[in-house]
Image (cartoon, rainbow, N blue to C red):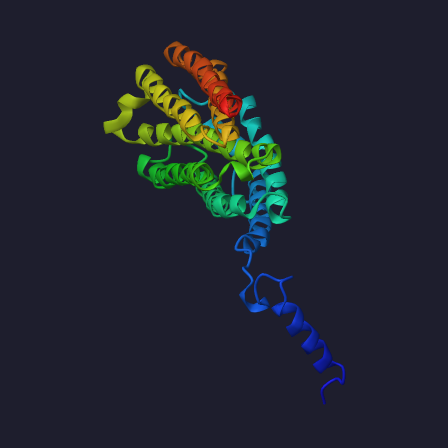
Length: 306
């Protein structure tokens, strides 16, 4: 049987829903479309951390450091520069918490979350391919290495595309009303930082592929490698200026910072020839300038407002 007070509660609820205190009936109130992304981001970040831990622990094969040492390129930065992954993961962890907890507006979550998840999936998949590379590169046939290096490079490009897409969605769909210092630090900046570093990583991945294809071997010579660095760094600087405009200067600052840091690492690399180091040194300054420009552009726009 029904509880004796239930009809009374229903009557009170009907009166309140029809009063001016409520703008919509309960059934028609809009749902927060960003809410489902909260737990998805949490799970995705946990998987990302777990996969990277397993890779560094040798669960999938040799760790990244050992593989990278066995497969050098003329554009690989010095080892210490790869420590940038620490700040990237920490900032994205804080950003994940901010988005999952509703600290940043739902419009920001809707724009960024699917792209972050896509990038993390590509980064995790890359680990599996890269860790399976033969530990005796000189003895392994080129086709065997290419079967792993080609998809690995493609996954790095896909991962960067995900972060670039996040930056584009922030720039086009998130207006000034949803801008804040917290969003710039925990969402915009790590988006740009990850995108810029993935650009450098993709350049290394492509260079490894070029080494296995005789028709493309010219791009692995000192001059060819210098040209590759110039292309990657130019794209990074242009992206910093473009994506950092509007209401997301943190993206530009992160993109430029990662690109400049990669170029600095190349100038300190023991495998980079002088032709490559000269280009890297020039673009280290150019990239840094593009980041500062995107940041100052935002401030000049704010000061110009009445």
